[in-house]
Length: 281
Image 1: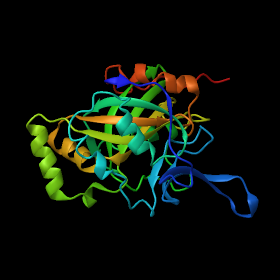
Image 2: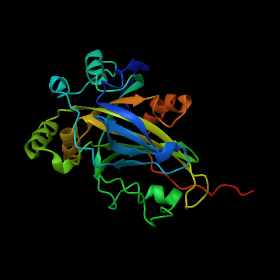
Image 3: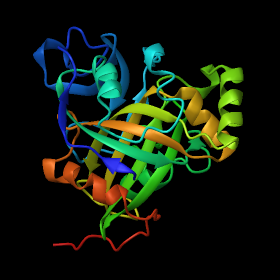
Image 4: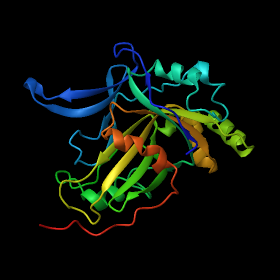
């Protein structure tokens, strides 16, 4: 954690925003079906379900084909941003987002690239330990994208914070020469800045199906700018700064939980140690 800004209003009317949050309804006027992150009015990611007891989720959908980086901000973000309240950067990226209240967080992360089903995958590791495997498919949740793990720490004895950075398109779509340029500059000491829109989803299983009954606080950063930077940092084992615009309106968390994020994110990194099962009765 470097600095937290004050919550502020950002964004434009939904009809003008390139990125928005939406709800897919059941046919014939049924209830909500999927919670979605939309890009250019198309579903790009399926997110954790509204109930708060289903597993944490960010699942890439077929419409996730576009990066949202801004050419006008490239030079500004080549080095380390020092102020989460930088009005030039906030106003520029705010023009991509829906109107709402956002908490700016300036973080330092050392990303580790994870492939679903492979070593370090949250969905087939920590999530299965709490929710078990999907009861219908008989498999762990599958996010349909590589992603980066950056940080985790204890919230309390029965809750843990997990942090992820999710690219809008897979790292295999990145331009190799640009990744290599960032690797070289990072090895020379440069610390670039990436920008994300982020959600905090607090999920706790309704019943004990796994070995570690606990609440998962999922801090998920969706990359607006920085796809090449994140891959380069993961390849070189170097830090990158992250300007996170945490949506307070669209997160599945109470206001007091969002308010705890700066303090939680400033704690030392710690891996979850499974606690005892909940008391019966």
